[in-house]
Amino acid sequence: MTSPRAAAPTQGFTLTELLIGIALALLVLFAAGSLLVSSSRSASDLQIRNDLLLEQQVAANYLLAGAREAAYVYPNGTAINLPAHYSTTRPGGGSWTVGGSVPILAFIQAPERPVTGCALTTADTRRACYTFRAYYPVRRADWTAAAPPEANPGADPGNDDRWVLAEFTQVLNAVTPPTVTGAQNLAAGGLNGAATLLLDYVQPAVPGLPALLDAVTPVPQAPGTVRVTMNLSLNRAVRGRDTTLPARPDATPATWVQRVTVAPRNVGTLAP
Image (tube, rainbow, N blue to C red; front, top):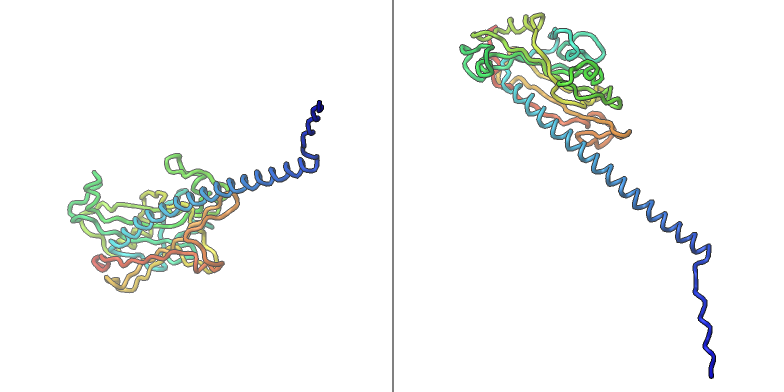
């Protein structure tokens, strides 16, 4: 009788093979984790960019729609004496002047309805009034430090030096159109309206960057000769990286903006 053979010994992993396998598994896990983190950051960056794009489009459409209805655009050199408030604080301090180192755009907007129906009683009657509007930047940290909760976008220390774009509005309670002289006197010392935040994370001025707001105002002002330009550039820092809009093709600030120009169609209608 043939005796049964002994079972072959089970082949196991050597210590070297085990260590190599663990190392390979760790490499795979590390690569998968890196891909997940990268994908998460990309999705977050895309969401931030989409949010900036939407806010930019809404703000630009609103501002330029109002500028298109301007009856008078304040020319370079005009002092705009906004009331002292956190919402009118000029970056770097000082007073507001059209065409100065910190941009401000100001104009008198024509009413939607005959001015004879102007009154401040309802939103409907205010549509018949001429309106003073000014647009200008405020340092983001200055705005968030003092704004009440309903007007505060929230502190963001990594973006303290960014600007917010503000709108100052004052409805003119009169049933007759203002004159150019009256508009100038209003800017010089008769302003008592209020400001609201229009756009967040605006790129501050740097050498070579076109002015955020600009206007060409020949004398006399007439349709087709006056131009209002908005040079938009947004920049938000998140986790040490900047999300910019529009995308920046190079380091030349002149290429960082999206430029939009409109021609006000009611200029020249105010008496001197």
